Length: 260
Picture 1 (tube, rainbow, N blue to C red):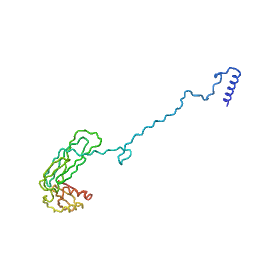
Picture 2: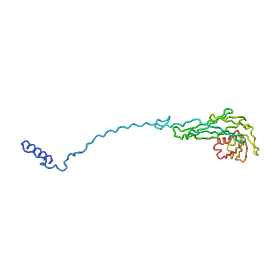
Picture 3: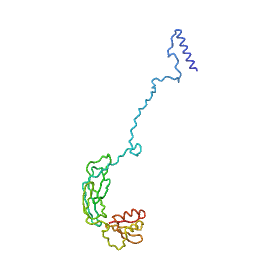
């Protein structure tokens, strides 16, 4: 309150002196402002509005494959094609029944290509072998040829004697079967054990009665049974006994199997 009265009195004195023509006092004639009196802060920067940031464009998302999750990158399936076959060699193995193998040789076009699968079929006296390859899409690969070799066991059981042709992706080779490869013509090996029909042997295996099974190339199958007996049978084709064991499942989990 005293400060305000002093200021008012000073202003009134200045006005009176000016009216009377008296000299006006300079600012130095006034007493200094009291401590704590607010003064202007020269040179203090004033706040400026912050410019709004420029919005960034939203990066595009990968188009999902059909049925895939949104945003997931599309994975291209591998490239499938027929293998390049250069030669086919036929091997006729000794034994009864006769076993025949086709040795297929070829070359992959690059270091990324591999065998995708081999399919075997037969049309009369022609064995048709299709060799497929696969290659990862968009892969960076060495471009040198890579040779390969595969052995295909031909399904010869039950075939009569004659001349046959093997065709692997249009490359051909022929061979001659000099004797029938049917079960009825195969010699039966003399054995001290009783011989049973294959249907009976199959029933014993499926019942889990065989502790050990032995198969020969002559299609002779010997069963050592859990009750101490041993029986012999002739399977209709090679590895038929193994197929029965697989069908047996858990009941044949401890059955030992051997082949020559």
